[in-house]
Length: 117
Length: 107
Image (cartoon, rainbow over all chains, first blue to last red; front, side, top):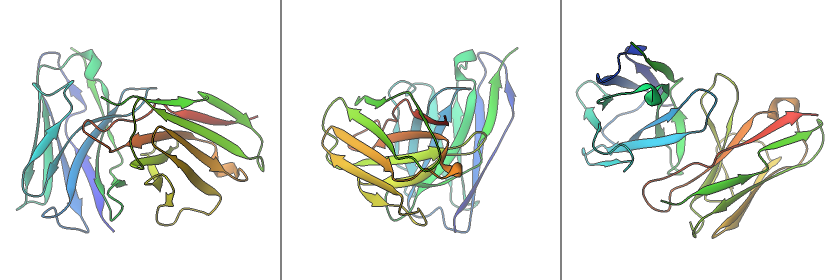
């Protein structure tokens, strides 16, 4: 059973860079696709982007210029960096991955990131 | 970007009743559609994938139907643990998107 755990600062100042890491256990990051999804408080879900085990990425066009997703196979984790954040980036950030269905069957518990000075 | 519109926004039902949730896509997503359940403070849980297939461990009272632009999630008889928010999501082409959600609340 794959398990995912997000980690990173819970508070980021406006205009700075939000950085989160998702640690994968119970499975190898050297397979499948690894995604970041966010959910502003009280709102719906937004798929930010994903990275494959080979390092190829796909980013949501709404964030493309600010978003970087990377993978570290030696540490079995993948990361998100979102630059030039504003209050609109305040959200619970989830990492997630597929199972055999090719849909998001495994999710982290989510981490709330607040953008505020 | 494909927009998924879910209706109704809120469904007020009693335990034991049948719930019918709708998801409409702005263009065809073929059968590349999933349904998720989310409870407060929890991550979403995959229920249905490819329109009609139940995910691992999902009870038979959950069923999905549809293809193209119109999809339905049916809960045949609501269990108290089924009161939650439900989202549809497509993976037809990037960016993959979610619908706005339907909240199933206790009447």
